[in-house]
Image 1 (spheres, rainbow, N blue to C red):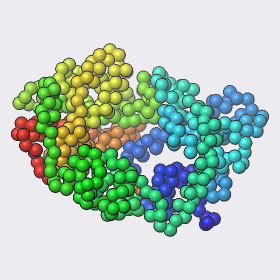
Image 2: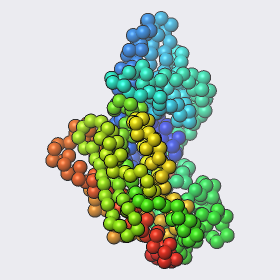
Image 3: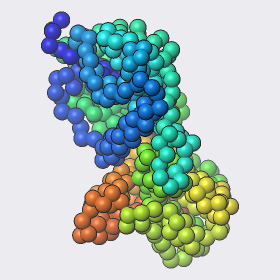
Image 4: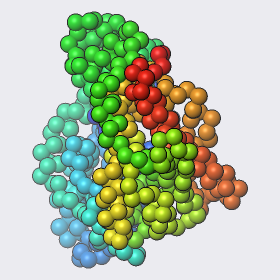
Length: 482
Ligand code: SF4
């Protein structure tokens, strides 16, 4: 065993994510850049941790003989950790171990190994009395100044952590072995490389349409296919056991066929009522409630785009709202939405669970509009269901139903590629930077237009896809071929 290899807590958590991630870190394999929203959330977590520090400073003042220790380093051989917080009871000379998390609850699968790794090291040096996760209180609603004693919850997880420590001691030894491997292929990899941070080490030269595009295929099935030497979806044997949707994804990929369920499409279209509305929201998540009435980890809604078709053959109308000056966007957004969005007609969204959650938040924040927002909810239809449920499935979707995949497959002339802001995560971060006062006026004005263009395209894309599916229905044909 090399005496130089060190396993920090971050290394250990990377090992739990996937042994190959630890190997990649230890061997300086370049990681694909983080999504802008993931970076924002990391920074947001640090902001929450600074408030956690303030909360604990106040807490310790109420406990005679106690003092707070922050970010202390400890080692046990090759295992190193930095502890977020320790409360030292100088009367009993014992310590409480506290890990601050910006989540709104306890996540035992993640938080217990994290604390147990620290405890295993710490108990070599001092007597640990209790272990806590300090997390955000999901039920807290801001009302004026932040009340830290209500914002945070100190969850006692001592018994669970102590019960996990032995497993962690065994696991961290495994992590040390993985870190010292010459070749990453000796360590396990996961079977879900779509959001892969190190594609080069697990799946070099992965075919464009691979077995990982077969939706909801279990890891054991993927392993079976890999054992058969199959990585390209076109090589999946015809008798390989798959459910109906998975088989359709494979068959459509192999023969280039488009699958259309005309009867189901007709049934759906009969349920749609004019005027038709196409709605898309943009928001940015904030760990700490920014405005009155907001809760921890709330999505702050700052923009919408809305297209309307009053009746068959009518001109397309467009409405929009964007709050792009610092401050609470909600009052004006609610007023504007109420003004633009009529009381009747089907409202289309894409991946409607997001719009639905925002509608419910609006209903809670604005009781006067709750009945209206409830009715919006009942009128909402998820246009994504059509590709997702394979009512219309094109091999170009490659097992997915995101609008960013469906749009270029069916309407290639309408593209996000040229837009400076072309993803929801970029829109979120743009609003955050503006609200935090991080934008000069020139940049703010340009970004404002970029956001309007992006959100406009989201709902225009829905209109065009709606018309596409309508044409498929009326023509009785399958639309474009690949
Ligand atoms: S496939 Fe990607 S996500 Fe999975 S272990 Fe390998 S590097 Fe990680």
